[in-house]
Image (cartoon, rainbow, N blue to C red):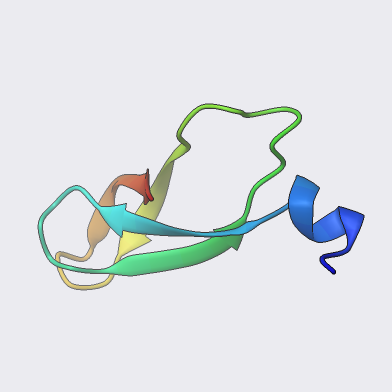
Length: 56
């Protein structure tokens, strides 16, 4: 049986929009952000900050 904390904060994978294949793994609070998450993070392949989008 899954704990209540794992249901509220699932582990998600975010993929770079630069097309480099870089991924970023984080947790997400579904109570505050039920939509897909987008964050500006550093992509080491292109060596600049790009938008990372949540993949499902």
